[in-house]
Image (cartoon, rainbow, N blue to C red):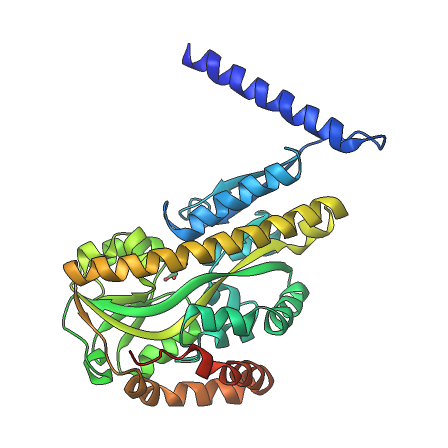
Length: 343
Ligand code: TK8
């Protein structure tokens, strides 16, 4: 009975889509082939990245009259972030809303988005990155097989751990901190005297629970959607770096799509990033309030941490002088507008 009504439902939806595409087709050639595109990501259900992916799927279906179907495989079900980048590069996975570190192993400049204390907030980062900076990164990515649709918000990152409360940079020294597969984060935590330990995000909960690592760093939204607060006791609101989630498609797959489908994808990706950023902002505020109840929360002086990590910026400047200038100049130009006003 259930099965029958499900099948009837599917038949109804298919008929509706066919009718829509017949209308949309006008006198032009009728397209009968539907297109299926597979999108992989590593976020947990309820995470803004998961919900943003669902928004993208819905918008593509609406805007293509059902002709283009996005199939979402989330929660690292088709591999962790590093593996998904490899699959997209090889063309065996169509799209991924990935992470900055694994992306930067293909586009090294992207790691500089995570320079310590470059941004005051996510809003500051959007204002700096949307536009010329994104174009620079997208052009570099195109050369190595990735079409960048846009940059989602993976948020300002804070430090959690189960050993001690962090009030100043010295407190981080000696802690074993899990990092993503990201050279910038490894560099920052090395500079602070911690023991940075790269590990796939999907293995993090267990590693924290078993004490294989003492702590980790992530935006509170990711901490919450993967329940990491259950296995941590301290949260230091450092905002030590910002990350994007680059939304990438295999360049070969992108080029093989018709111009009208590419337009639908680009426009749906725009709607989806707006929704994802809105959810990030909304959830972040609520989660900070909630974490005050369940974790011991500190607000260390960011200036002290900025000073302690200054050699990191110098190293990256030496390695990528042009991109370093471009991103730091753009960030400085509007920093004042984004600094928190004293109450
Ligand atoms: C989830 C991860 C997570 C990232 C990390 O896919 O690895 O710490 O911040 O968002 O990509």
